[in-house]
Length: 498
Image 1 (tube, rainbow, N blue to C red):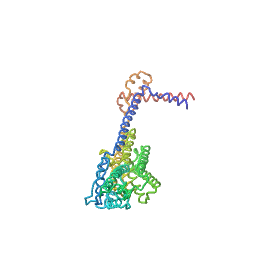
Image 2: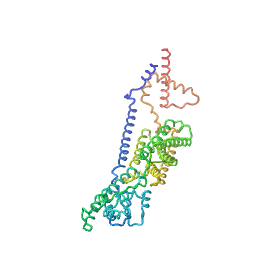
Image 3: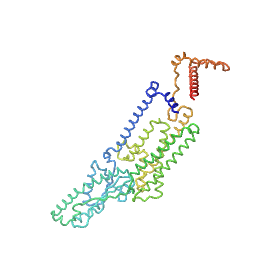
Image 4: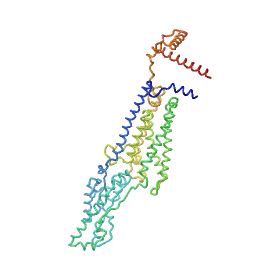
């Protein structure tokens, strides 16, 4: 056995032999193509990811806040003027004033508008603020500064953007507390010739130091401690495990199906496997989310199936996309497509399209963004309800990629059956050209002469008229005769050794 192994190794060529020059060049070209493609993929993916989250404060004016003063006192009007001026800061949200408008004429109407997503938040000067403050300053009455202004917020939009916008609004209001306190103190001192000592003695100390503050009213809390982990980690897990694994599994067993089974049955079987596997993974991911939902959220059975449907729709949109790539792209470039797709969707999950550069608003059409939007609507009990838009986008992605994969599977099966394509999505190699120059030199050897004689004798012995053999046919028959003779010689040697 060892001697046979050595004999076989002697027949093989060393890596840098002249005969393997073409093979080495083809290998080097493949490595170079791979290097160029993945360098391009890497830079595009990273630039897209970083660009999606770059300096979103520049677009903070795209976030709008409703402002309304429900108190008619001079004190409330002075505070309103300061608030409006404070929100003119370029790092603050855009404040839309509705004090003299019939729109949003009640606190309930303003909260409903924020809950529906018509505004990012609202600033409300509460009714009775001026009278309560004046009584606290002049008579020392009890006073709660946070009853002056209500900051209405919500958390149904993208997590990081909501934090940024709400923080900017709170910064503006907090910065006004000191200047407004000084203004009220000066007014009390100059009123009716009062002096500072008298004002301090008769005023409520809390009202004198902090004449106004604000209370935050979150109308759409997440009700879930790990909401960002759901949006990024769980969706990525469903995408990778639910999409890549069945596609790679199918890749290893697909050849006999393409060559022996009807195309319609291959398409149906592949779609069935993809859907069953995606459902299997997504129902487990949903179970994991429910197992670690925390104390703030009390989910129901309806929530379970709604979340499962969101995960499943997101996963299928990627599964059929990967099917398209595996039936169209060369295997060495498949990972580049996976990598780019994953990074674009992670950018949508981590940074979102809101308050981004206008180019990155294309993230509104990315499955991860719409799946996250549906999850946030679910977790906030229906706030910022854009379900029709989100479901439509993800269904369209799934349908488009399924139709594309159906066409590409049928195309590949037909071309594989006809011998025009290999399972690796490349055409079969061309037949090697005969070495004519070697045949001329080899014509003088005894082995080739006997092979030629064998060919001519077999042609003469055949019945009917034998066509004149071409030079290529003679060469092929000569090589066949040499191979048979070599095999016979080897067999004789082995018999003698035994």
